Image (cartoon, rainbow, N blue to C red; front, side):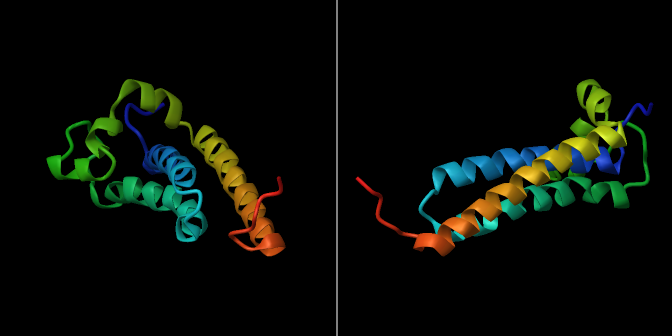
Length: 126
């Protein structure tokens, strides 16, 4: 196993962080249609943002340039023992991201069905 995270590990780290932000957004802004429709893209954008420096940084050591911290604490996550032990395995990252992706798809299908049935602002039965 590597002593540092690979690109998939960084994507998984960003994807998990983006999922937390996604869940907070859909819970906080339940009545905002824009947030409900576009919040599922947050995990993918965060994952891409977190993995972006892996493409451009050729150093595979733990000494990363300071500017990489703007990408989801890239230099911190690159050699963090806990993250490396969990996210260095490509199969585990694929499984975790796949389960989260399945949740996002099910939630999105539920949202579309709800909007088709009664519109966005339907009255609740008493």
